[in-house]
Image 1 (cartoon, rainbow, N blue to C red):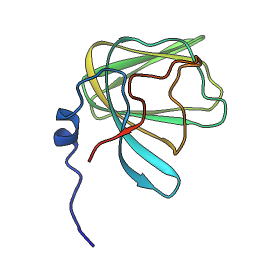
Image 2 (tube, one colour):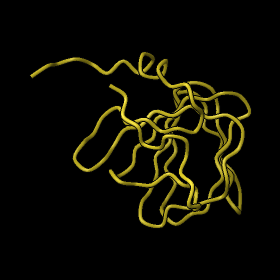
Image 3 (tube, rainbow, N blue to C red):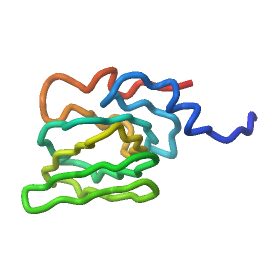
Length: 121
């Protein structure tokens, strides 16, 4: 067995595209994904799963139909399943997502995010 810590900054340095989740590890049936975001994504919801956002660098906002939450560096937020949301970041923001394996990051459309769910080695 090879024991080595996952270096988040090293993995993030390999990500060039915005809104492109990259798998960096798995725990049981859950995946840990790194993603860089900037600007706005579209309104969408995840009907079958909660979604965890952990901000590693920068600041993001998630708008809801009845309010919003700001998630700054070192903070996390759990969006309950079925809640409609619109993530955004004024400046580039680095996030770790935790979600079940196979969760599709489409924003409710047929077109997936750029290279969605790629695996970083």
